[in-house]
Length: 249
Length: 354
Image (cartoon, rainbow over the protein chains, first blue to last red):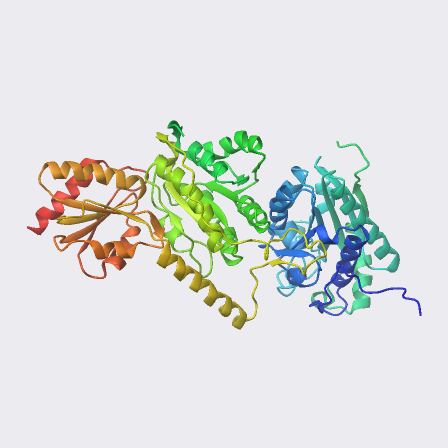
């Protein structure tokens, strides 16, 4: 019998705490597989956010920290400035990264901090029960935008990759999705590029991963993937926004 | 080592580097700007790292990260900036991470002013952030004492795995005094190997630095152990100075800058034949309650003297346990009391009592 796929040793084997159909599990696997394939699992130090991935410290098979809400890039900075040859990554949701942690995110990029951020955007607050996120789409209903997000009242959603791409210290910025096997493969490659950017000490790297929240979107897992493609992808186009290969602007 | 003339804030930086601190994360705020400026100049020479963070919130979280690697790390700020660090401080206490935080207090509330004040006593000694925690708080009364308390603070932080605060004020930070940098007596410190996050090397199970303990039984069990640790600190780490207690008819209680003013007041009172003494807490948490057992029978009253509206006053009352009437004299808003004002308050009180 031939083994074609096995659970990554980059994961601990603890049962995920995510809802059925949520794509956090796929993203965890991609991060873990990359750490193993790049041979850096033993040097990796991860930082969990506050949000659905708060228990990520139980899932990644490397040294882990749990940070205060939004502060993971600052915590990562503190670690990386001491341990410059380790691989330091944060794993953050849209509320953590793009609302309460906006300053920490932007300034880690401004400093060109040699860290990697995995930014999971599912356009809603999952852990707290479906409130508006900074990335909630116009018209999208949430428990704090019961009539749908309106441009007049809540403003239009923030595009994190496009914003960070304006910052010279941001070396590697990409948006991917895990809605299909083809996109999962692309996402894995983008995460690999981000880690390689850090290992080569080329500066700040971030991968935004479009993700689903069947529970709080009120859709089944298959409908959720379809909703992501129909609604999120047009507003959050996939692609590479900064590449470590291009000259720093 | 010969004595050198140094500003408090710069002497603090020099003492920290000498104590092995190699990581400083800060943000400018008056009256402690000479600390980050000194660190920006001197840390690289010592092979260390200085980062000017985007905010005090970020700076304290950088401390959280660096402390998790086992490095000696510190931050400094002044009152409004220390308020911003309270979230991080609560997490650092909960994660049991060693580090040093310095507050060169200015007046408040709000933006307040930039003159010396002692109005952050409650914040420093009652936790300050959310949850059930305390941290050792040292109150230096001179630049020399500040310099001497720095290595002790780092050692205590490592020994007990706790944040430690040095609570100075704008006067201690800005004053220039002659100082001597002593070699700190070596203190056996526990290894950090079994908890630091430095990478597993795939040779051990992951270390996790965490403050989320979502099962109540688990959190209570952790806290019981944590409170035991605090109890040990209370038993072993109280420090205070007794000054002129013998035969004193009134005992003043003051810390930091104010205690120096009180000493001047006591000298002038002695010249007038009034016997007054001083208890000067050096640790504000744990509060040196035992010092009050040493107050002689001659004392008829206590007076807390502060640059605040009366914050340490609460601890003086707790420590007095009803044994003496407790009075208060203070200036606030950045006003520094004069020795004459303090002496006048003592005379008025004694006069009132006659």
